Image (cartoon, rainbow, N blue to C red):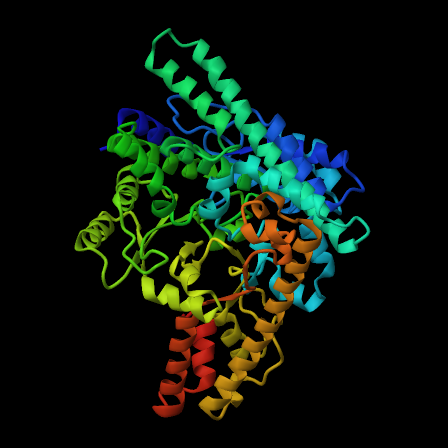
Length: 590
């Protein structure tokens, strides 16, 4: 059962409308005006630092875990360095669009048009992408729903799991700074490669300093707020404890469960501020958090109920961040879903069952808080406890949509097949919706969606689209001219291959531009191999680099359609190809 505190916060979350904040975009823009000519990674890192230094600080009523990306509790931000044109086009209608509406006032619209968008004109990732895209690719790949990749050129890549086990918790961002400084000392300034590495290390020093400053500002705010509370009151004590925690983490390694919880949220905040990404995954929460939980429980400094309340507080913080996306992207990713995938259960790196108290507490938090984030996944294997299976099925029965249930051995085998070391493959977590992933990975999987149905539509309609009335595919003979089923199938594959070709052009173009224009210093600092190699995530700096990967949409529809054509037209002669295609194109009217 939720505590009174968590229920109050939950009601705020349930009843609040998502509101757009312009703070981050304004600070980011002002910073870039001052850093013209510097290395791109330095400019982005400086903008991150400036945002951490200037973003308004908000500690909301009753919070135990603090940190906000804007002035609103249920908040979305703008990232004009990625894209601003779609915002300019759509923002007056944010509030009344059918999928994922946002509140954005006229005053805010006027402000961004005056103070933010003019600077980014001709400088955004979106504009560079559209300028480089071949005309034929753009015709079928920009805002059509035929092939869709705009979450990769209007947004950040995302698809990363910060490494709490080997980087963040052992070192803290203060330790990351020291390590980067030591790396710089060993570089040769006469080497072009080493100069690039120096820029990289300088950039992660800046972002690490930024997130530390951000935490210290929350410590200051908590102390000031505590002074306004009655002497000896519970809230005053809580605020002073929050201040002490924010003084220590994320600069230093966490010393207890509560500090580790706050560290996680500050890291998540850093990822959001840096790029507002999709699939910024908390990973195997029950594994990296359990040592802190176990230590505090055994020491008597934490009760199970206190830990449960903190977990539920974190669930609500994950849900208060709103992913800001275009109407076209919202059609694919409706529900304000940032795909922050948190994975529990499974096996340890050595192959033993990994379930523990936190595994069950995470499922309980999802059941009680009923938030849409984090996306809870469970890894189920042949030897997992019956109690665990019972908890999984109980949560499923509640109709929350969680947990997503994954076969542990299949995830392991997929990573083995991709070249992962066995222990790393065994340590997998989910990324986004259903991608087996590992915390030392740079991913590019949700790269482009291909509509299988469009390929069949073009095969049967001489390359024309029923949605646009225009020729969107390759030339093809009339449907009535197909004399065998094999000809239909061949025509489908011809159109499908063409869509795949343009899909690859889309995603390779976007990938190159991400390397050139939007390196990822903050999230790179959470990756062991990036720090070791002096290479940004966008440049393949992670230990494992996966993608780009094409996603198919409508496979079952096309398979069924081809089966119907084969049966009705060419086997049973129920109707002709012309009759069937005419009926389909008229939505079966008459």
